[in-house]
Length: 62
Image (cartoon, rainbow, N blue to C red; front, side, top):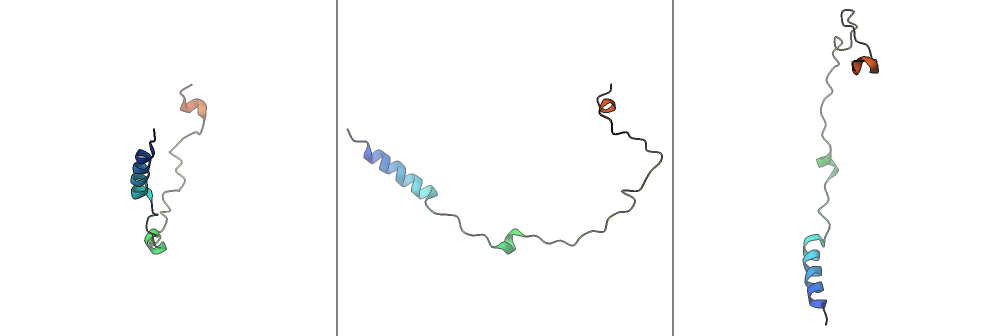
């Protein structure tokens, strides 16, 4: 009993699907250039009315 034809058929299907590498993608198509936006100084400004504590016990409500 030889199962070679079934194996050849599966091999041929696999080669048809995965037999060659995909086309190369140019570097220019991978890179997107955008101008930098200026940073908002108010975003990181100190606000004395905002009182937050970085404490795990408070985060867990203990």
